[in-house]
Amino acid sequence: MRGDGSLFRRGRVWWAVYYLEGRRIQESLGTDDPDIAARRLQKLRKARESGTYLAPAERKATVAELLDDLVVHLKVKGAASAPKVASHLKAVRRELGHIKAPQLDTATVERAQAAWRDADVAPATVNRRCEALRQAFRLAARRTPPKVRAVPHIPLLRVRNARQGFLSRADFEALLRGLVDPDVRDFVEWFWWTGMRPKEIRLLTWEMFDRETWTLSLDPRAAKTGHGRVIPLEGALRAVFDRRLEVRRLDCPLIFHRVSRGRAGRPVKDFRLQWRAALKAAKLPAGLIPYDLRRSALRNMVRGGTDYTVAMKISGHRTRSTFDRYNITSTEDLRAAVERTTAYVEGLPSERTVVPIAAGVQKTATVRLHSGRKRPVSR
Image (cartoon, rainbow, N blue to C red; front, side, top):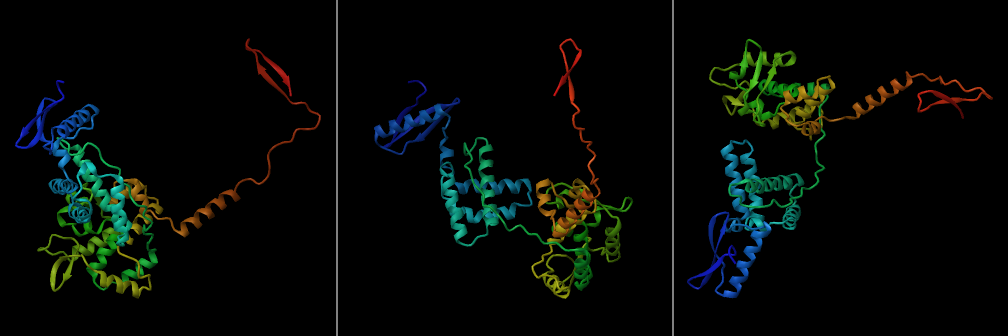
């Protein structure tokens, strides 16, 4: 029948030729048996009719090829996450890279997840790998022509290790006194007040400083989200910035710099030894990490009356859901909420204002008739 396609031999192997959307397609059927070749040609015809047809190139694409396309795509976009995604994809490539992309199903992904968990890989790391795999399939489905027709369901593991650490003002000031390097101290204090990401603070340069308005305009290239924002230099931030002006180096564009390994003007990166020593001196838990300052800053801004949308512009959060994960509720917050509720309820009237109906008095009501007049009704 016209449109079904036809068979021809090339050497000993049978080939199929058919048309799809005006394009002539030839592909090997991988057999020298004419009956098997005819059945495979019929299978191709049914796939075209049902909408499940995959071109030869799509059927040959492996998961590894899709992962390679994702890495190239992120590099072309200049995504800051490209190196981290490429690192997560190494394990995915070893476990699933050999599989043909159209054949990957949920069960295969879950077996890979189980293997990673058996190897003591953290659930959050497993999720980062699966998210990158899902991103690769979605990109492949959007290609022209698409490399896959459908994105398999890739479940994520439940993660219960979200950090809850934060520092009170007294704890932070004690920690600050324990930091011996003044450059690191300025970096940490800026981190505490703004909640900016450490990498963004490291990339702050004097070119971003506007002396007329006393603001810092964060370059979009220095922001993780790719969106710039403005930080007003007021209050405590102005004090930190004044100290940075005093130690400004003309040979270093960075606002926050330090002496590292005998070289001046180096970025403030690894200060773990100083951090641990400061925690010990302040008698704080050893499990606190510098990133807890970000949680503390967001918590302080919200409880200080700053609207969450404004706080997000300072910290650089793009979504409310992510922001809420950092906006930690402590026991003190819950206690204060109970105290406010108690004070409110205690201020309400405690005596009833309802007047009881005298005995023997009949209560009447009225109903409106269709004519518009009212008629009393006994109850």
